[in-house]
Image 1 (cartoon, rainbow, N blue to C red):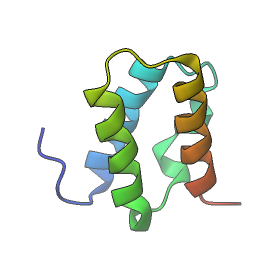
Image 2: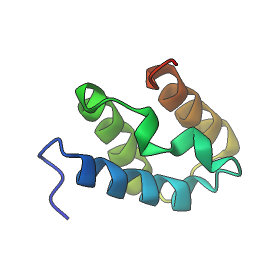
Image 3: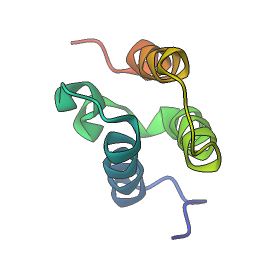
Image 4: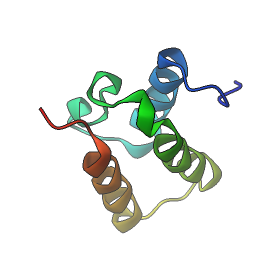
Length: 75
């Protein structure tokens, strides 16, 4: 899938794949509606890292989820 363009559809796709790969129990953490398209490049960086590293440690997963949490839109 081509993910160069910052669209809601692309962001939703990336979060679906991140949920699968990171085995996150609380899926609300990775709800694409909680993120702004202005942070698309940051989200894509995390996505690219996860996709290109098939064997992530628990520590890496925690760090990646924490990073995504830090860029989530605060309500």
